[in-house]
Image (cartoon, rainbow, N blue to C red; front, side, top):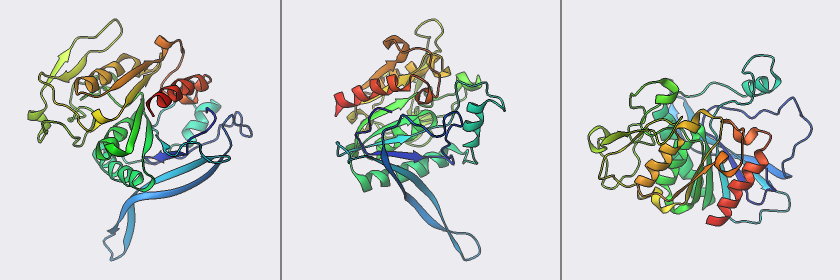
Length: 300
């Protein structure tokens, strides 16, 4: 982690706990910070017996740098889930530490996106303007929260966001539409409006942009715009050895087609090599963080 200068809020969008690596349990290169937590969003629901449960709340972990933050706006990190740089087998200490952090989670993406958009908007209403950094499955949540509160999002960084637009062809080898609104499963603001994405959001398939890349599904012309996302500076970050390397450029082009100001930090093109999907946990993560920090500074 670069020397912590912004308040940092870590959001848990699905059931997921943080684990300390057994490889180095007593030392950390992180800047000293005060850690606290709180919850936002959620509501009481009847449990069917006359009693009530509180559900759909978002857990937020707050880190304030030692000596206080030097910037007024916070950085919100919405992570996904994955593992990288291990054998993926029991007994590998890195994999064991990762797998220990996995607990049950809601696998209905419509419910996940709806809950987290509401809770994320409530978080911004509470803390004010912030920069959002998302990873993987958290990518759709960043787009949706930014769409709900565009005036409160100073910048949006998507680390290998869930994609590509409309389908999961690379990971499932299927052309079935899995994100009917292009970037998301639930409605996001288009202009002209999209009421029924099956009829209002025309699609076309374009060939791969180069060797080793996937084809993309884009909007047919004339493309509808994403007016709320277009108000926010954005960057997509992709690593060299991740499965995202073949299709993240499709997400970038889709955003650009919809009028969004988005930069593409393709790490190998900038001399940063060897990373996979969980790039922020790998040995050169400081180098990657520096590149992301430099971009954020240029936009604030």
